[in-house]
Image (tube, rainbow, N blue to C red; front, side, top):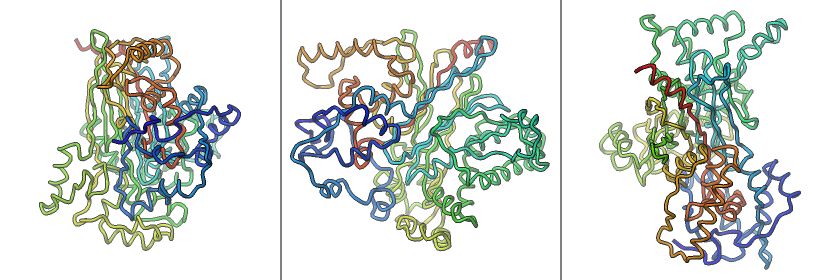
Length: 580
């Protein structure tokens, strides 16, 4: 690997303070990239080499010519740099710590489970979440909600590819139930919290978990025009938006789903199998995404929207926590990691999900068994599905699910924007026996114990930059304020006595400033982006990474979305004692 002799990153080897009055308005309005796109540049060619300890992020799709027009900017970085005239004197911006914090904290959100009579009876104390974009716009999404008609809490992260349309559709709020404008004022006050806006995937899961009687009550309410019972209480960041235009379409699909659940109920058993409910919800939502795109919509905007959702894709990692019962449903390569505190105070990581990609031998074998033997060498090629797609399970991505005839028919009858797009008309190579892709999740069950302190849900942007054990240790030390000191590892580097003194001084400073972040997910992102080769946050490095223009940011990392769920050990222990 080539290393820049004068910089730890290919840009901004020197520092120039930027006035605060310039940066803060830009940070609030997400305009930083526009400034950097014109004011920051590479002064010497050798500064464009790879960074020494951050691997370049791999795109989820191979840069096939037809795909490149859909996924990548029209200008390559080389064209980008050659198309601009540069001054002879380097001009490099250097973010101050407050400016760095403003960027890191822009999307953070925290929720604490309310107490009743001074006691928290939930196994979940609360959660912290945050996002850091690399793509513009960000393709990741996140969601969290408390189940109101059933017990428990739902949390999830969604990683989009080929745009954000599919991840948005999977995670966004559904719509309002039934217009309540004609209801009396007293009734409106009573149901103010009853007519909820809900997100698609979580609502599908919630419906799957509802008893037969509740489903009948909801269906009767819709038929008679009455207000519906609230099913979910959402916990969302103010910037998490939703699409009002598609709400009616989404509601009709959901209603058809619960009508079928009512018809299929035999009345023999009232117990709900959570694992089965999660699997059915994932598969049915993906089926609806596909069906909506095939049927189309008279509204040109909606017609193009449902097609964009279907032709893009998204992975999902969802956790359902009910008392001591923890279920994780995963489709794709996001991960769920449990943080366990050992008796000596150290931290260990327990993986609760499996990546669905070429590194998972069972996934590769599953794919080969689902297709003829003569496709064994082509179904997974260069560690990608059909040589193109990195995750082997995902929502949407109908290019890997529909027959060629169906794809052509939908494209030909679709809007001009779709018909003129090279990506949509491109057929993957060796495409003989679709579908090659599924949204069916792999569900893992774990019974919580008092030593299980937290759960980390994160998209692959985090796991590409940090080892799972480091993730758990950093979060554990942040939540407890206790640092389990390990000998400083230098990883083969030659370190002088002065450098070692600096590392020890840095460790001491780190212990005193651990609470600089008020959000565990933010603290984790700070380490993921700013850690140096010794595992300590380097402010200059962090500043450089956050200063990269849009054309470069995705080359060095992916979008990062994190939810850290903190468990209530006292409640979990009480459950355990009741059973003994």
